[in-house]
Length: 572
Image 1: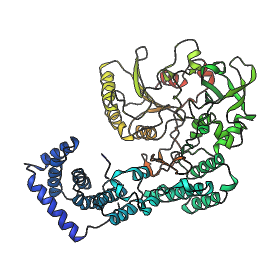
Image 2: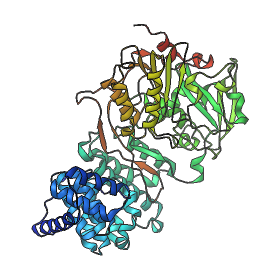
Image 3: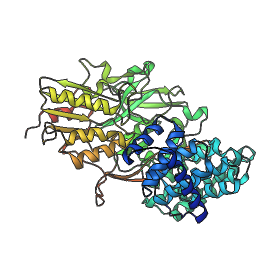
């Protein structure tokens, strides 16, 4: 079901009279002895997608309580699902007036209703209004069958960025993409009072200057310039998500690098390069690692200065990206200078392939790759044991510690997070547990709202929510919804933080509703929500650990985890 989610628009008298008539009519049909029972019936019918009775119940609900934005939105939804688009329009207008959800969503829903009724002019008017006030999902507007009646209209095509780019020259195509990007940043990137490190005018001027240089730049260089533009907006979610979907752009070295305190090392590799595992990278393409990191710094969007240390090792895999930056001359192979695990230095040529394109997900190694940790004697430390699982826990009886690795703020299809949380705390309450360790160093986010049961369980746990009993391991990859969750833990529990600083801020601009630039096929994202999970006066660049244990190659090579060692050694 499409989401039909505060600009104050007043209903005209005719619309209000018609809406009151509908509400009264439906209310008379719904028989409910009490408001609470009617509301329960309405929510139940909507959950079952039984829309006819749902509409009658919601009509009674808004008749008895006409001041709730959520109730009006639900009423409008039920009317829409019943294909009663004419009556859904004033209901959506009332929901918009009362501030239900995103105001742009309500305006968009009204546009869809008018389109389905065949009123193209009213549909375009409301669609334009939705875009004016920050409608987020450009791809939905492009593909939504509700708007089918508008698809041949040139005004619609221009509004949603569907002009025919196939007939444009290269220069025209790139300029079309840049103009669309400029418009989207202008209307969406600055929506809802979002603070930026650059202004609308400054961004527009930068786009104008780039547009004038299109003929002088190659396509890869244009991609680089777009990355720089997005970086200038000053948040870690806004940026280029995927390069053009052409074969060459998928070329990447079949190696995974990681930046430790001592330098850049190979921590995973395709089988044909197993001999490079554990090697320190000294140069790539004749450039030192420091030179490469400085060059990549110009194209990596971030909330703080920890995030580039997370992304740069992944971007080092992408030879097309390095080529566009002038760091390599051949996008199909690169010469690496390395210091082997045994201390000897040598040069090796590594060929790129398109089997495993560049990814910024640290544990997203192909199943057939080998990690350096797997080649070491002894068992893997807990933090490397099961990093691809969404969440899991293990009891350490000798230390009476429950170790809980929380890798994504998402529901595992086999066990939703709320159910997992219930099982976790049942175990804690029924066993001799002195400490709970929540390891979030690999958690790059998901859905913030899913963490609430975990937060509430921690808050009410007298057994665990005490200083010296609750520990949270954080790191450079703790980002987005994981950052919000960490911030909530800091505000509402007595957790002690261990590891290195988080990859985002306690208050940050986030969200992903990406879209593809039509000509270049570059996928970009423009963040539009200010997550203020901490106090309004919190201007910190990250959440810092009380027990600082930055990743070192020496510890990694020895199968040690300094973060867990700090937890186990902590004494009140």
